[in-house]
Picture 1: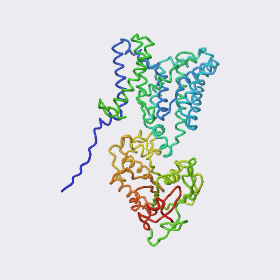
Picture 2: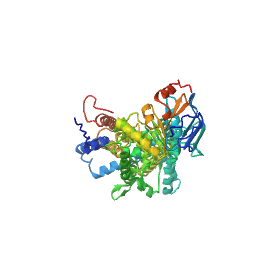
Picture 3: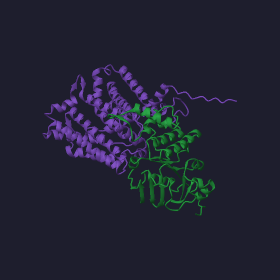
Picture 4: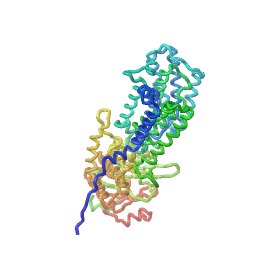
Length: 336
Length: 261
């Protein structure tokens, strides 16, 4: 009578990789399918000029989406980013046309964004009011403030060529807004991937009480991510103002929904904890590509919104049903 | 731990070594709304001994241990750590004083990998960045010392079994040189070999002079590692016994309220 013990062998590393990154792989696949589809349907879609145009237009969304990824990772939401963009956009135009040098105006606007976000974050983290409510109020307040400032008029920005270069210029053939967006994306990626602060953000979203118990400044971390969406919204507002050469209270209508759709499409969970900065970039670009591609295919712009919405729903449905760990298809395909 | 010491005075118990307590709680009270969770509890913890904290559900064991760990702030009462009065405002304060706790709910972050959870709140850094390689190396040592087997340290904790998760929570609390180690039901989800490893661990850290508080329902564990056993009932400490002076029967009577001190 002998008893033999054997050890389990480790599973394949490839399978672990696929399981860990299922969400990003699926949105990447979907993004490539979109590129191929629109590339074959339209001759101009894949030209460098058009691709650069897409990135230039997506830049403000991308900048805010990076910060929004952090907010959603803490299981929060910021619905006020579109209104913040409009408010800062108008404020920037007014400040610059009042004769304030544009570099000073930029610093002031970023600080204003940080302050707005800081106040909202304080209500969320220290006062315990749901982020949805706080930022829904913010959505109304800042859009109203923008209307009040401009009285509904568009305010032109003149004699600030350096400022307008930020929105219209190119560096080494690449649009400046795109370069700024790429820098923000890289910074956001590194922060979430390999810094203690990123780790704190994920911990707070994953298990807030656990984060507190291991001594993390949980409330301060939650507050800080709203400061980041504030700053990112201010940056996006500056990019928009510089591209359009004016400030308007009607800027960035529906902006918050585009941003949130991009983040969620990328696989960041609204329940918190689960996060993917690469997914956010791919999700945001996918939405931008779909919008651009449909226009190039001469689909009615009214129809574009419907198609975008349906595709987002389908993509997220696929994400949750087909790509969550198990690859089985059929009854009980999903385990999460 | 002298067998000759047969009686326990109701107040001012003598220590196993006759020295001063590492930590001393006096008259701790805690109320949640209208519920009196703790109604004036005294407890001493000595270096190098294990105190078992037993009692029925809602007797106040977890609340008391969370107060020591800084998770709850007591409404009333005093806490002395090495003859110095302390008031913990947060778990971070307690952790800074080398008090570690294994929580009943484990307090792990499901979306963070095994290494990240082991180092949660004290991440190793290289410059501004997390030093993942160094943390993996240290984590392997930590787990090996506790005879815990986790196949992949970069797997997310949500992928692990209940026992593995509990093992990680224990490794996290035990591996950073605590002076006081509080364990709330640490063995409830563990496999046979892992329970042995945890009991072995408790005996080892005791030898290093750590004061251990063990909250458990598993009576057989108490007799393996505890030097003293405190019984809680309805938010009070009703009895305290030296392990060698008591038996299972007496403890069960004390827990259900038939003690009659």
